[in-house]
Image (cartoon, rainbow over all chains, first blue to last red; front, top):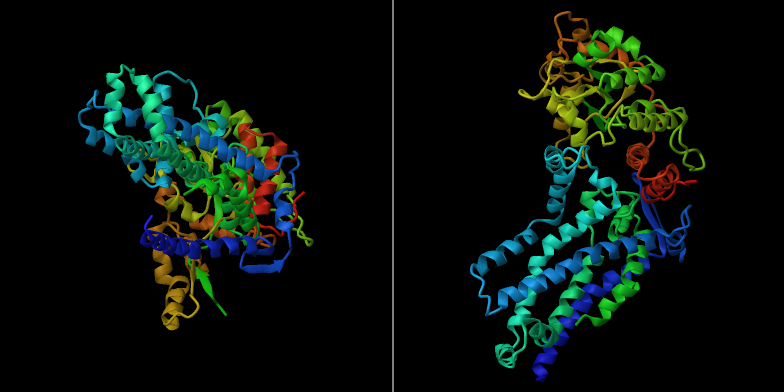
Length: 292
Length: 293
C-alpha cells in the first residue's frame, strides 16, 4: 500500500481511539465505585473495589445468576432473529442478482424490503404491542375466524414474546442484509458464473462452489455486524414488554438489565460492571478481535 | 417558603357504573351502594354477585391497589432500610390473585387499553377508583359521544379512603419573573372565580375550601358525567379521611413494581416465589440501598 494511504488510515484510527477509549476506560473506572441516586439524594461516589462485580454474580434465591440468564436471553433472541434473517437475505440476494431469473421491478422490491428498517425500532415495537395486545386486532381476528375461543395473552408466554421479538428484528434487518449481500455477489466476476454454467454446473453447485466461497468476506462482515447489533438489543424487547422482560424476565436482554440500573437510580457503579462484563465476555471479544 | 402548590385536591372515590350497580345490587343510589361496599369483605361479596351476573368487579386487578396502599400502617422501608410489605398490601395481593382466579377482574395494567376498553357503554366493569381528574384525564372512553356512557356513572367512598396524584405548579429555581409566578400560583388556589371555573367547566375538585363548600352546598350543582351527582360534596367529605403519614419517596416505583411483578403470578406465568424474587430484583435495581429478603 502506498505510504499516503497508511498515514491517512493511521490518522482516522487514532481519532477512533481518541473517541472510543476514554468512555471505555471511564466505564471500568466507574465500576469500582458505589455511585447512585435515591430520589433527590446522591450517594457516593465511594470506592468499593470489586463489590459491584460480586453483587452481579451473586446467585438469587433460586440459585441462578441473573446476568448469565440475561446473556442467555440475548443470545437466544439474536440467534432467533439473525439466522432466518441471513438465510432469507442470502436467498433473495441470489434471486435478485441471477441473470437467468431477471426479476422485474427489482428496484421496487428492494425498496419495499428495506422499508421496515426506516421505522424507528421503538415505534415498530409499539405497533406490534398494539397489534398483539389482548384487545388488539390479532386477537379479534383469531376469535372472529373461530381459530381461538379465548383471548391469547401473547405477552405471558416465553415462546410468543421471544418469537415476536425475533420476528421484528428479522423484518427490520433482512432488507438491509439483502442489499449488502447483493453488493457482495455483484462484486464477483460474472465470467466465473458463465464458466460454471458452460461446464455444466447446476444452480446449487454454482452457489456452493462459486458464490458462497467468494462471498465469504462480505458474509462474515454481515454476521459480525448482526452480532454486534444483537448484543446491543434493547429497544424492541424494552418497548414490547414495557421494560419488564416478561414472562419471568425471560426476554430481558443485557442492555435492558443495564438500563434497569441506569433508568431511575443512575447506578453508574453497577451499570459500569454490567457493561464491562458484557463487552469483555467471549462472544463480544470475538467480534472485537475479528472486526477490521 | 412555598415552592409549589397544587390547583387540585385529590381525594379519590369508587367510581361505579349506575346501570351495572342497579343490575347487581338493585340500586344505583350512592348511599346504598356505599353501604354495600363499605369494607373489603362486603366489597369482595359484591364482586362475587357481579361475576354471577357476568360483570367484572374491576377492570384491572391493580384498580384497588391504591386504596390498600394509601392505608398502610407502616411505610415501605423501616428504620434500618429493610423492605417491609405491609399487611394491607398483602391483603391486596391475596385479593388480586383471588379476583384474577375467579374472573372478577382482568390481569392488566390500570393504564392499559384493556382496562380502559371496559369504560365504553359495552364494558362490563362495575368499579374504577380515582379522584376528580380521573373523569377527564382517564375516562375518555366513557365520555365518548358515540360509544361512551356519560351520565351512567356515580361515585361513593368505597371500602377505604384514598387519594391519587394531582398536578403541581412549581417555581423553577432562578426564574426571572418570580412575582408573576407567585401571581399565577395565587390565582389558581385563591381566586374564587378561577377555582369556580375549574369546578364548573373542568369538573375538577379545587384546592380552595370556600369554593368547594359553596358547590357542596349548592342543591343545583351536579356533574353531568355522574348523572347529576354533586361530586364536590362527596369529595369534601372524603378529603377529611385521608391518611398521609406512611408516604415515602419510594412509593411510586415500588407500587408499580409490585403490581407488575405480582400480575405475572396472577396470570399464572410464575410461581409466588418467582414473582416475589423478581419484585426484590426490581427493588434492588431501583433503590440499591433498600435491603430485601
